[in-house]
Each structure stands twice: as C-alpha cells, then as structure tokens.
Length: 300
Image (cartoon, rainbow, N blue to C red; front, side, top):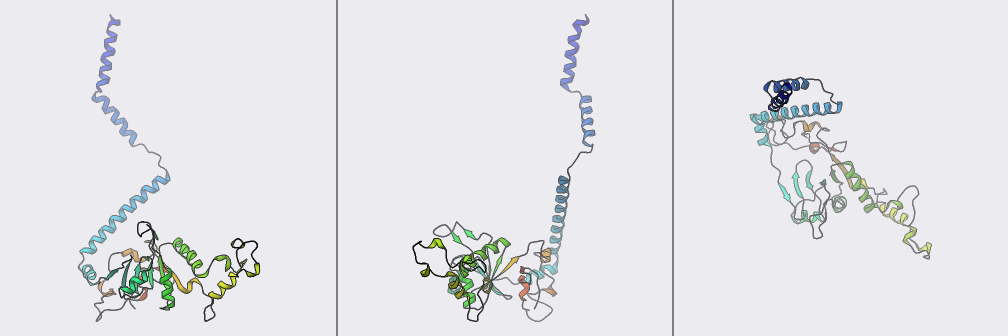
C-alpha cells in the first residue's frame, strides 16, 4: 500500500510547488532582499561618472534656482529694461550686420561679394567679422555650394580703403590655421617660392624639358617684389588680418552670470548714477591682449 500512496504524495508535493505558497514567496523575497544589501563591486570609472552626474544635476538645479530668483528681483527687471536693443540688418546675400557703440559694425557670416550689400544699403563696411562654425554651405547658391567665409575682399577693402586691419572672430585654433593657410597662398603666393630656406625659382614640372631655362620666370624674386610695400616693409598676413577667439564657458568669468545684466549702478548701457548714457569701452567684446573674445562689461 505504501507503494501506491507514494505517487499521490509526489503529485501533491508538485502541486504545492507549482502554486508557490506564500511562505515560499516570502522566503525568496527575504533572500533577494538580503542579497540586494550585500556590497557590490563598482568600478572607479562608473563611480566617478555617477558622482559627476550627481554634481552636475545639483549645479544645474542651483543655477535654475538662482536664475528664477534673479528674474523675480525688481532691480534685475529694471536692469533688463535699461539695456537697449541693437538693430540688426539682414544682408541680401546672407549674413547679418549690426552696429555697436564699442567697435562699430560687426557682421556674422561672410558670403561672396558681401561688402557690396553693405554699400548698397548705405551701411559702413564692417571691420569685425564673425566666421561661422560651418564655413561652407551646400544648401545655398545656384551650384548648391556657397563659401560663408569669403574674407579676402573685406580684408582688402579694410586695408586699402579704410587703412585698418580686418578682425576675424573664429571658434577654434583649427579654423584660424585653415584660414591662415588659404590666405597666405592667396596673398603671398605658393609657399615653395617664399620660403627663407630651400626656396625654389620655379617648378620643373611646370615647363617642358626642352624649354629654355634662361627664359623661365623667377617666381621667388617676382613674389618678393610684390610683397615689399612702399615703406620698405614686407607684406605679411598680419598686415591685413588679425584673429580673435571666442572664450568657452569655463575659460572666462563672464559666463558665470551669463544672461543676467549687471546692477543698475554698473550698467554700461544706461548708467542711472550719471546724466546721459556712457559709451562702451572697446574691451566690451573682449578684444583683449590675449586674443580672446570676452563678454566682460566695462566702461570707458
């Protein structure tokens, strides 16, 4: 008889297991809970990312709270209201031009023949140009390609007509290097004909082998002749151009209160403590001795 009951007991036991009694579930839950409190190994890199992300969230929340408080402040509202808006002129060929008290006109974007737009609109040709990050647009123009950094003619106009250097504001060292490389060859000629060491008079491959060597031009001498200006000085790229760089958020103290105007007594646009409106110093856009663009506000 014991042999007949054994299968029934096994079936009953299997049913109990399949139904997962509360005691079994509670036991497993307590086991999982105890395991979850066991210390786990976390790599230093993951721990660093987690801590950094937590700090970033706290800093972002603190900045938002400070910003909300500043906008609710009556003095801050008055300071915002005291800042005049700049008129922006959109140019027909592209780009925008705006006039400032600090440095005159500033233009963003340099499409081809852009100085003609300024002349036809009766605007002064800018001396300072902001070079776009994307210096070539493939979605404009009849051939689906437009250079947005055509700085040569603005540079020539500033040098020969206005007798000034043209300032290009760029976003990176690479942008400056690329522009320097292009303009050096445009202005001064190929590098192999103007090197101080190992320069050459001409390229052998440019002439037929049976062409008389004495009749070949000496490009090195010709280019040097045109580089000498009337005052005897040699023309260099810096004669026409100078570069300035934008500061990043962590490279300038000016970004600490970005978007929040200064107190009214220090407001350079309309200083309430003195009669009239004060002029803005040239350092307002940060054309400092380090070649950096800084948004720090100062009065002259």
